[in-house]
Each structure stands twice: as C-alpha cells, then as structure tokens.
Image (tube, rainbow, N blue to C red; front, top):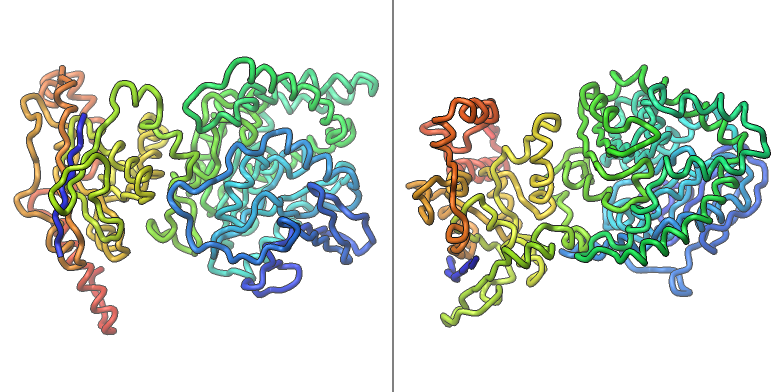
Length: 629
C-alpha cells in the first residue's frame, strides 16, 4: 500500500502557603492529619521527613541539588512517560520504608518519582486499597506525575481511624485544594477500598468539581468472597495466619501480568525465562504482606471496606461527579466487571473501561495505563470545562508503541510506504516535503475501511514529532458502552492519536492554533465504498474547507492513497446487506439514532459553520450581542 503526498502552498506546597504559584514541587509532601503530638521522622525512598507539629515536609534531593527548573508548558509528541521503569519491587520497597516508623494517624505524601508536572496541572489524590500503604500507584507514578500534582494517602498499619475519620481526612485536603485552585477539578483515584471511599466523599460534596477514577471499586463487597473473610479470620488460629497470604495471593494477584510490566509497550513478547525469573523473584515478597496487614489490621480493614461499600451504595444517587471505572475481567476477589456495569447504569456521568485479562491488582499489572484511559474518555482537564484542544495531551512513547501500526504483524503484512514532494518537484520517501510549521491542511481520499488513517498519522508522529489531528465523524465519539463495546478499542486509538470530531468550530480552532489537520472530504461513504467503486471520490460539489484554509493562510497538501483496494476484494457490500432481510435488520438497528454528518438541504455545511463561527468571534470582540453561536 502506498500513500503519495504532494505539496501545494496556499498562501508550592499547600502546607506553607495558599498561593498556588508558590507550590514547592521540589519537595516531597507528607501531611499527618491528627493531634499535635510529636512523631518520629518518616523515611520515604531514602528521604527523611522533618516534623513540624502535625505536618511532615521532606526535602527532595535532585542530583545533590534542589531542582529549580520551571515546569514545562506542554508535553511534546512521544514524550517519555517512564511507564514500566518502576515495578512491584519498587512498590514493596516504598511500602516497607513507609511502615518502618508507622506511628501516628493517616497522612499524605507525594512520590519522588512523580517529578514536576506541566503548568496548571490539577491535583490527583490516590486513595489506596485495603493495604493502606499508598504505594499501589508505583507503576503509574512517573506517567501521572507529568500531568498531575500527585498525592497519596498512607494509612499506618496500626491506625484505627474510622470510616468517618478517613472521609474527613480526604474532605479536608479536597477543600484546601479547592481554595488553592477554585477553577480546577480535583481527581480522586481510588483502588478497591479507596474506590468506595472516593464515592463516599463525592456523595457528601456534590458541589465540588471532583473527577473519580475507580479501579475495581469495592462497592460490590456484599456480593464478593470478602464478605465471608472476617468470620474465617476470626476462627483462624494466630499461628496459622502466616500461611494466609500465600493461600490468598494467587486469587488477588496475577503474577504473570506483574512480571510482564517491563515488557508493556514493546513489540516483542518477553522470554519465558525472564518471566519465570521475575515470578520467582516476586514470590518471597508475599511475606511482606504479613507486616503490612497483620491479622488484627486485616480484620479492621475488612470492616472499613464493608462500611464504605454500604455508605457509598446508599448515596450513589447523590453523586454528580464524572466517574471513570476501570474494571478487571478476571477479578477473583470482587465481581468488578458486573459492578462497573451497575455503576454505569446508576451514576449520572459514568464511563467504563474493562480490561478482560487483568486481575484484582489492576494498577500493578501489565496492559493497563491509567492516563491513557483518562485521555480516551476525555476526562483530563485543567479548568472547570473540558476543551478538546487545550486539554489535549500528545501521545506518549508507551502509547505509541502500543498502536496497531507498530505491531510486528502490521509491518509484515500491511506496512505502508509514504512519499512526499519537495518544493523543487523532487519526490522523496518520507515526510521531508511537508512543512513543520502550521497551519497545514492535508486533504486526501479514503481507501477501503479507512485503514489509511493510521499509517499517515503515526508517520507524522514518528518522523516529524507532530500531532496530525484527523477530523473524524462525531459518531465515533458517541459510543454506547454496553451495546457497542466492540468499537471502543478503535475509538480509543483515534482519540489517543489526536482525532477531533469534525465540525466547523473544531476546524476553526485547529487552524487558529496553527495545527496540522487531516481531512477526508469523502468521509465514511468513501471509506465504506461498495463494489465497483474502488478509487472513486465522494467529495461534495461544494468544497467545504478551501475558504476557511485561505482565511488562515494554511498550506493545503493534497494526497492520494492507493494499494488497499488492490489487495482486498469486497465479498458483501451495503447493497447486498440491504437485500438480505436478516442483515438489513442488523444494519437498521446499528444505524438507529445515528446522525448524518451532511444531511441534504438541512442546516449549514461544515464550511458555513466555520464561517459563521468566525463571524461570531468577530462580533464578540466588538462587544455585540449574539443570538446564535
């Protein structure tokens, strides 16, 4: 398959200061919520904290000096997210350091691995599972630390704070962060018990702009094996509790997925020997759970889980926050997949992502990238309202390596070749003939099934480190999670790659931002062409993009895609399906309620929408009142 492109030019810390500008990102923040009794110092990854009444603030050593670099404005394409550079071994080390001096009440800390996020980043509060260490986010710390001010809750081993007390601790920091940044959302990332705790906080604070990320939330406690565990522990003699973690760990953890975390984002499968070695290395770590969860502590935490689940379930109707549920398909502890579907039906603003091959410890296993899930559901924002362009995060190196076009089978069977034309007319392989500075509008034809989108977008990322925003049919962004789950992976790939719903307003914003834009005037009709229509264009008679591109001085680059129709042959097309009663019914069912992007003789065209939006912006600048926008 070949894509040919030709060039045509047309012309600080909240403990110290309530001023957000002075938040000290070169420090590790550890906050103890409780009385003013003196406490011992806490060591986190080799960094000791200093006691200041009820607050612990630990200095962070960056290469022997305090880092004075300013936070970056934005991320670059293919930015290094650090995913997979930390494993469960690092999490165990952090947890052991946290519990060495584990007196006192629950406290907050900022992992050193998070580093400095981009400017105007929101706060993300991690609420741990039943272990309470706060180290369960270790795999994702570096990735999330690029775009969030991450803080983790640590619940000491012998702490017996009630559910009401834990809710109060979370609410207190939520209110502090709300005071610091009243126009930013506050993220609560809760795992298992932490997910139920996050729902409790959201139910009590419906007016606060909270966004909940729930990883296998424990709201299904009553329908899980955990419900029978307290009675089992009560009858279990103390001397036999030492074998309990070894008996339970195969149900809780997927050691194969944990061992594969370093191979996530690579094209090759990790060797069996490496996986076996990692598995053997992790087995002794099970004994650490005896120190993190002694029998009395586990019994108390199970009571907390039961109380949190009951409290949250009784108040789900009061939750107005955006919610994203990350559910495992092979969770042996909680019915997470069914619970995610239940929450999706009950909560007002809920989205779901199911990871069929993962177990209960979803945040410690391969195949799950929390930031990617947040991005693909459009839940990342830095203000009170989501802006599809301002809040867009470029693709990371890990996400890029997991694109379909980066797999070995794609390169073997379908690999595309791209050529471009230089200004002197010379044809070269690659994108050297494409200008680096925008605005640039790339216009071309769809081949069969529109698979041509992926190689051209990925090539712009790989060769020019540029996000090529494809204007995509809006229906790809309006998916019924329960009935159309099979489309979600495709839609997520499009969103991660920078696809934007096609509209006059989005077209205007992209050109105004001097972006690189990919447009297929033929749309899905061209990509889903029928028998005998190979190579045929379905462009509208009235070109909807030229006038707007000229207004912004954009460079228009036409291209032609060939090859796909030569290696594929249609067996059944739309006309054949309409003639078959069964297939016709299926097509009508799928299309029911769908929006035609270009309905005949109804409303303005895409170009006219953009022109109207431009005129509306001019009227706003002049102070005129608007009746249409």
